[in-house]
Image (cartoon, rainbow, N blue to C red; front, side):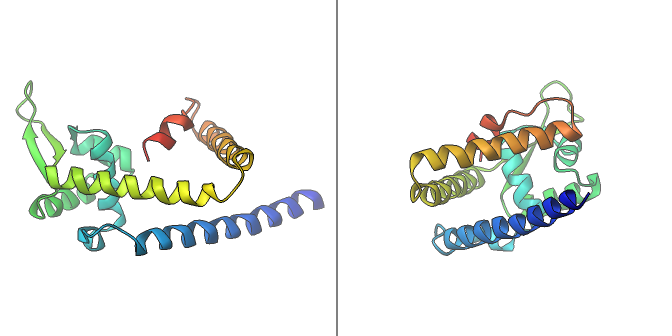
Length: 167
């Protein structure tokens, strides 16, 4: 039993170190962020919603709430605010006019695309200081952990390769 407690303590210490590395790397990235500062006024839920709509254009609000695991009311408020900022557009479904599908504006597509490019570059830069074997080991280990963690709560296997490519 002592071994399990020791392992948990060590895992918690490693998690803290892992968070520090990622916080520091993304702080570096945000200091070199592109010139568009519209994201500084957005909550984390709105940023997640923009990213989700970038990858899933035409999602309806109810689906977006489910994907983000937040209430439909929170999504409704966020969408209304992002729409007033010119980031999101609502368009009637071509088969069911009662459904309003959500799309990013051209400006939002460009901003989210740039953000994904910057995130990818920051991660690549962080990895690039290590030998390629260690890069493979880190990424493979994280993919394995994600797969195990995802399958623990959800019997449908996730594809870590797809998740990593999509930002």
